[in-house]
Image (cartoon, rainbow, N blue to C red; front, side, top):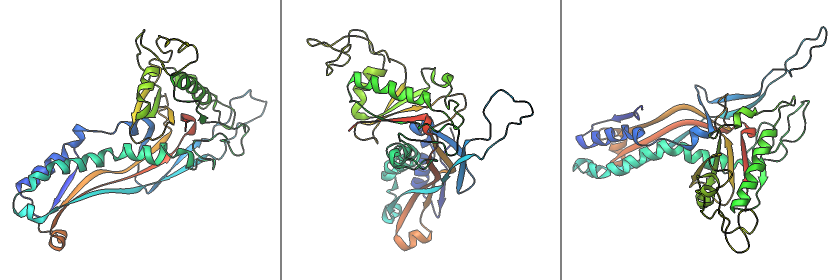
Length: 333
């Protein structure tokens, strides 16, 4: 695991060097979890990147005498790169009095915040507000009427489901609605966007949900043992009867990875296709400059003007919606 680069400018006493060494080791301790699962990661050397949605491959069809298959203009999604920062200042007297060590804990937290910012921002700036973000077809990323411009296949595509509730039977029903819609997505020539093989394995799908749904999601997708009440709030078969909870193992046990995310709010949840032959993901993460930390110590202009030691973390990356066919929102109030 690579270290987190730390640059110290100015004079560094032993305590400050110790803090820098601690920050450098933080990637060994903590790494993003959600971002790598749902984002296509691309090393970028520019301030933006263009992602091709439909390449110039014509539809496979019976060849007519003398016919030559032609290409077409690709549909693209442009994603820009931004700079993200986090910083803290330590009073200069602590440096002069050799009291810097007491700040090692909060300096470590700064490094953790910098590293894990990818998970937070992917959830809050993409997934959680996906129904308001513009996709390649000028529709919202999560929507009920995606269309391919100037294509042979113009039927609306859906990746937004109105949920029926948050009980076990509701979640199972809505999961199948989302999965069916994902399997029916077609490109502008009428071809399935997600081959059946991409959805067969048990780790191909991820259910991304708020913490408040943790228990019920575990009952639906976890390895629920036989005999445990599956959904004691439901009154519909087969999950319960009028007199007692129905006891059984969920039919969806192990069907999808389920992850509770503290940055999601409300009762809406999501189904992402996270593992497939092409490595396709619903969102994009452009990594322009990885996380790094700069420490401005005694002897720098900052210290002279402010009488503080500045610890500053920066990272340059871009976030964007990419492939709506690879993600479904189940909306619940």
